[in-house]
Each structure stands twice: as C-alpha cells, then as structure tokens.
Length: 481
Image (cartoon, rainbow, N blue to C red):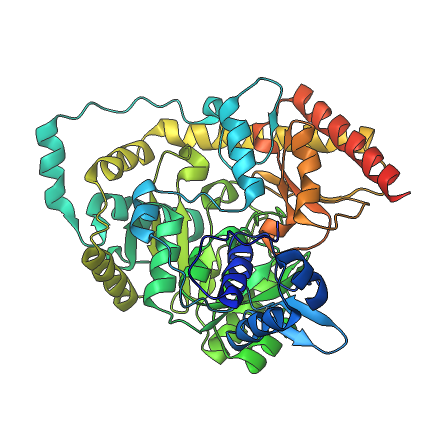
C-alpha cells in the first residue's frame, strides 16, 4: 500500500524516500520493477508532484532507483544498491541460527506452517521431514566429559570433528586438506556471513548464479554488496557472462552451488567446472562453493568432484550437515587457505559468536558410526523415489506447456508455468489453495517459476500437488482470457 503513516517528524519527501526503501528491503519491490508514474504517486500520497520529484531525486542520488526519460523509474537492478541507514541485527540472526525473510509471502507461509491445519501441503520448506532424519543412537556423555572435550577445541572448532571432515573429504573425493584449513561453523549461513563481512567491503561487486537461493538471504544486502546475476544453462554458469561482469563491474567474488543446485537441482558439468576454476584463477576472483549435499553426491559416481578439488587455493568450500541430519543440526564447515581460516576464526571470536561444544561432539560421534553411512544410502534412495513419484504425477496430470527440469539430486524441482504473474502478490493464489511453494522472485527470477520440494512428499501427496497446480493454472488462464 502506497500510504504514509502521518506520524513522522520527517519532511514529506523523506517519508516517501523511507517508504520506497522499505518496500524494496521487504521484497515488495523487486530489482528492475517499475514504480508508478510521478503523477500517480502524487495522487496516492496526496502531495504535490514536486514533492514526489524531490523524493525520487534523492533515491536516484542514493543509487536506489534508476530514472530514464521515456522509460519511467525502476528499482536499481544491482540488488537494491547500498542503504546507509539500514542495518540488521546480525547478533540476533546468528544466535537464532536461521533467518526469517521479511517478504510478506514468506511470513504468510510461516503462519500457515505453524497453524498445521492438516489441509496445507508444504512443498516450500527446504528441510528434511522428521521421519527422514537419521535414526542413530548416540553414546551418553557426562557433563564432565563435555567439559573435558573443550580442551580439544580452538578458535576454528572441535579438532576431532575437523579431522573427521578431513578424512571424509579425502575418502569421498581424494581431496587432500589439513585440519588447519577446516573451520567449524554453526551452519552454512554463518560461514557466508563471515565471508561477506570479513573478506569483502561495502560497495564490492559479487556475481551470484541465477537463479539461486542466495538471493533470498539478506546477508549480502546487509554487507552493502552489489549483486550481479550470473546466468546459467543446463551445464552451469555461463563463463562468457562472468567474463563480461568482471570487466564491467570488477567482480570481487563468485558464489555458486554447483551440485544439486538450489533451486534447479542441476549439476554443473565437469567441463564447465574446469572452465570456471580456470577463468577465476586467471582473473584472481575467489570462488565460494556451497555444497550442502556433498555426501549424497558422493554416492553417485556420475557427479563430478567439488570445485575445491580442482583448485584448492582459490575456492572457499562450504559444507553442512543440516540437509543430511535435519535442520536442528547447526553444524557446517568452511575449507580454505590457512590464512583465511585464521582470519575468519579470529573475527568470529571478536564478535563473540562462539560455537557450543555440544553439537560438535555429537556430530563427530554420529559421523563416525556405521549407522550414518546406512542413513546416507537410505536417504539417497528415498529422495530418488520421491523425485520420480512427483515427476510421474506431473507428467500424468499437468498440461504439456508446463516446463520443469528433472533434478539430478537434492530436494527440489524447478518448474516454469505457462501463465503470467504480474506481481509478487499474484503468488498468493497458491496459499489460497493451501499449497506452500517457493516463488521464483525469491531466487532472483521475475518469471512465473516455482520451486517444489519433493523431499517432503509421499506419493499420494505428489498427486494432490499436481492437481492443485493444474487447478491454479485453469484459474489463471481464465483471468487472462
């Protein structure tokens, strides 16, 4: 709603500036989305057109919007530009171990998830359902034994866990790494937070593959980074596009999720991985490789090894247990050059974001059980079956003009719908039909695309999802007729 609160002491034009910035931060206005014309804004706010012009001039000066004669006013495509006055309480964020986006759609999804009416089908959540988490007995620990284990911890984390990860990476991929190069974090997002806050500075340009779940994270925006979309095809990021971005914007870092990519489920080809590593080494651009499904991928000999194996010096590798053991397992790790690991470890210590010894000891215990390897194989086959069940339902029920990518692994399926969604609010039609999905705008895409999480679906539910989507398509096509 384009309405001023009326209870601010700020001049009217600055109230308009604040309102538009808030809409951008909250996701109500997307990059490159067009704002209403000046005359229409003046009518909405009940002010003179000159007041609106002054507000838009201020937003233009801040690089928040772009104004072109004859084309109107659009939100800056560089992921909202830089907001000097906005800040995020990251201490609260990391303490909670997660992030709830401010986008109204996501807030409503959360409300419906918590209501648990029995009617709602949740294919939005990217977490494992409880019945698919490992059923492994953990040994009992005394309070004294936990305290004793703290003697084996330093700034980079619990040493036995780091040695276990070191061993597993070597067994799975032949990756030779030292314990000093492994940094334990409270999940992948803490690793990303430390990278963006400590290795980059406000105003730096980064390239992120598109689409990507990275676009749903506010930590890039909080760090004041300029984000540029790096287009993908079925083999992964397009190298020529990266070269162009570097020369135009001096990109300082590249963020990719090459294996079972979120949201597409694609796997970057070995040829493309080699090309990416080569050009980034030539241009001296570090690569951040997010690989939450690494241990599942290791069970499939057709999946190429991580980028980290191709270039051990220029790739920062992020792994996590949350996709394997459940979202409450807030254990992740970062593998990188020793100097980088030491810098990030000290930064975390200075920020007082300590990591509890309890989850580290428990995770190390589970990773070293035979039951863990059994769980991995079972999870791999269950996910494969649920993916195939969903695809079978889609092919049998949905019209042929619905396009989707068969994921090679992971949790998600990415599909393009043959209808038009003119605004974010149009996706509310899914919520109205008790189907929780993740719309494309959360992944940096403006088209009518959605992500469906098949990891949470039984076969009967897969058919129901297909039927609901079919009904929504009928309703949307009637609206467009």
